[in-house]
Image (cartoon, rainbow, N blue to C red):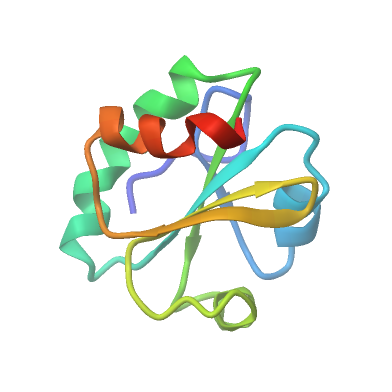
Length: 115
């Protein structure tokens, strides 16, 4: 996958079963998580959209990706069956869930009320 490492707030973070609670559930800001897979073409199409959102919304929203094949516990815990699945977490709880790739404008419209 072509996602940046977990560095600053303007980068897409890669999260795992091991750090999901700390990186997503304990985060003060809302976190947009993409449940993704390397074999998923729509997921690859979404990568630059998520990178733009991470950069443009830094300080207001965190963006993370979780590889479903490498992280089955978190994937199962949230009932993810299709890729890409996008979930917004706020205060440790999923508050919005969407399935399928979408354009940046549409995605931002869909999550505006939970930011």
